[in-house]
Amino acid sequence: MSLNTKAIAKNAYFISKHRGRVTARVRVPGGHLEARHLEIIKEIAERCGNGTVHLTARQAFAIPGIPAEKIPEVRKLLAPYIREAEVGMGVNLPDPEGGFPVPLPPNVLACIGSRDCVFGNIDTAELAQKIERTFYPGSTLLKIGVAGCANDCAKVHMQDVGIIGMVEPLYDPARCIGCEACVKNCRRAASGALRAENYKVARDDLRCLGCGECVLKCPTGAWSRGAKYYRLVIGGRTGRKHPRAARTFLEWAGEEAVIQVIANILAYIEKHRDKTLPKEHLGYIIDRTGYGVFKQEVLAGVNLGPRAKVAKYINFGGYAYDKGVQLT
Ligand code: SF4
Ligand code: SF4
Ligand code: SF4
Image (cartoon, rainbow, N blue to C red):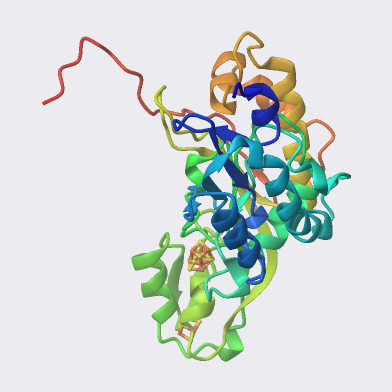
């Protein structure tokens, strides 16, 4: 049987190394789903695949070993999931029975965030789904990750765009007993932004990461969580060609500003990407246009708010392969 590989790939299936077989990929926006949806994944794997399921690094499901002629059956089984997990969240997919409509749908990945983690400053899955609602199913390659705090369990520094939840720590001196637990912990586990002063605590705003650790450490509730903000890191990437970690672009930005910036990044990619290549990561495009052009275009028309800070320059560092270098 000859496969129409282009049509299959457009429907978000991978062509397998096993002749005549494909792997179905199922997106999980924000990495969070209803437990009952696992029944659907199980049924597809057992009825149409080889009985196994692979969890991808982007928090999606890959269901391998599906004979290509069973794709219509997979679509039928998958439709309720797409209706509930994508359309139900507000994603614009008018034909759930048709499966996923674009070939490369990297879902926004996220750590569990404030839904369950004591460190979480933001509801990561909610933000991930909001971003998906705005941008999926566009076909521009943009890998986005969301971490609930600076611990970055989601490894967003390896994404094209990483979003990290921040919080403004609010200090009530009347409740402070001067125990210095927050000062010691900030020095040990964060950035050393706190110092003891006359049996009270002072915070260096420039050093503060907005991680919220001080709130967790204070035995008297003298620190509390104030407004939520976001740090945006850009240009991270993996792959064989010059992998590198993302660098900070914005700090203390609001949620709406982050969504607008991501919309502008998509436009920037479409304007500047190398159209001779099937895809190109954001970091390579920034390397070509320069950070100044990137900054100007993606901040155009964005109200960052009074608290936001923008990186003046970025030196991405990382490494380039040099065949003359001997590794020992
Ligand atoms: S990044 Fe922060 S919020 Fe997310 S799981 Fe890790 S510690 Fe929790
Ligand atoms: S939010 Fe984090 S970095 Fe800022 S003062 Fe508290 S512990 Fe230190
Ligand atoms: S941990 Fe709380 S009580 Fe102790 S110094 Fe810090 S703010 Fe004051």
